[in-house]
Length: 294
Image 1 (cartoon, rainbow, N blue to C red):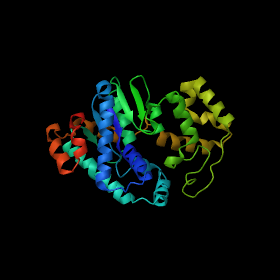
Image 2: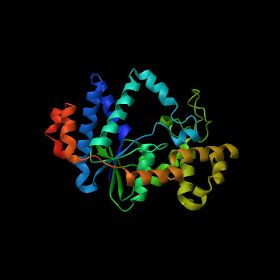
Image 3: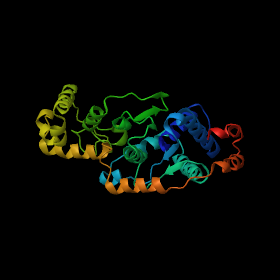
Image 4: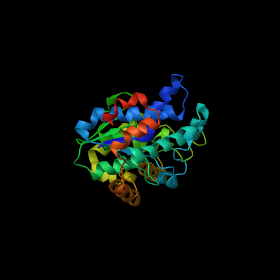
């Protein structure tokens, strides 16, 4: 499968267009999105198979668990000067057009992010070759001999750290872009513009070395590490659980995972022979010559 992180790649491309001085409207957004999908399909189909478009729900289960999850992004969007209501409305319309007219599975599950959909599908199809199209480093934890990742930003295959080591360090350090503080810091660190409590590199290195040496025992019982981390026991245990739940893609709730698999298995696709009319109706004249690449 070629697993497309739909919102991430679409918004990334739109920001590039905006930085070039192009005015964003629905036709431009549609053109950029469809042209990118054509490129990824052409580049990877022979080795990895067909596209699967993985979408973010408007509602995240992680926000139910942790109310500050991605809360800082709203401020960033407001400061950007972009019309984000128009952008998201347009992306949702194009998502629906992909469902109706294109021969790809478009997977959209209430409560799930694209990260969840991709993680569940690569686990479910573990023996298949899978290419994740996203610049999101969260996916490094999924890398295996059967799972690779291509970054639209660098235009290269992502070669990150060893997946388990990366995941462990990510849990310790948190993820500012998602509003997840490091393991020393309180829940409202980013929403209240507080400074994170610093974690010395030597402490992180010591923790990671121990986790590497003692794999199962210590990793399954992180409460054993609070003395090494020089952190109060209750704070360490609570914040470890918070960050692990939010960051570790093996912690997706079972109900969400089941819904993702059911949606993937049952979702209908559009018909390839109807694409020409869609392209004509939407004045995608410069893409019609490449219709066979869709």
